[in-house]
Image 1 (cartoon, rainbow, N blue to C red):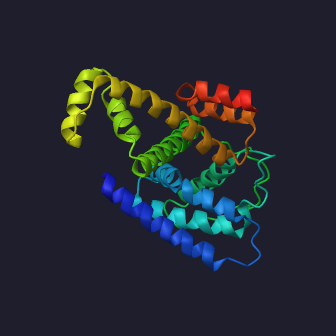
Image 2 (tube, rainbow, N blue to C red; image 1 turned 135 degrees about the vertical axis):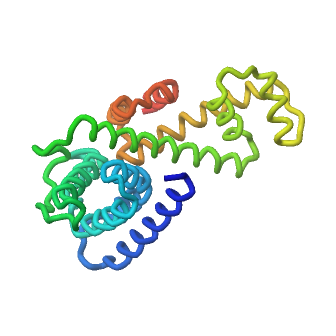
Length: 250
């Protein structure tokens, strides 16, 4: 599936989820508005995981819709940051959902116990599926961080996103050559010194934004839990200095 088609499907899924959430407002559901917002925030990771598991875009859309229904019907009512990470509850529901679809050979997912007692359960997925989910979640966290950096560039005019993206895609290009190339693209002269300084500041800003994104996904500001999540997601190398600073401020 190409990128534009995936974005179109994700847009449809988010629209459907919004309708589901609005339909259940005030209906006694025990999930919070914050959890609903977070689920939509990580909808890309959810969809990509399901699509990788079922290999059928149409089935993936239907399973995403079923996921939203189970969400508002109470599958997450015991999801508490003190008991476990939100993504672990998401993962548990997704594993059940995909397993049910597979057992039904593509038919409507069959019912299962909707009470999620703990982030992990006895029907644990294979290591490959577990890694698939983790990879998708990490990519979504990084994508959200890049989006936040781009928003700052638009607000301030600082070329943080432009330069850091260039550096990430072309790590071996010298600052002098980068200044020439970006100067042509932007229609204004740039110096190698300015490029190096902007990239340094962009990396610091990216690290701060990444820490905040992960903290939001955990629904906690606890530094130790934040560090462990960064380790689990393989994101610690991006922001070790920023994390050390946050530890010092804690």
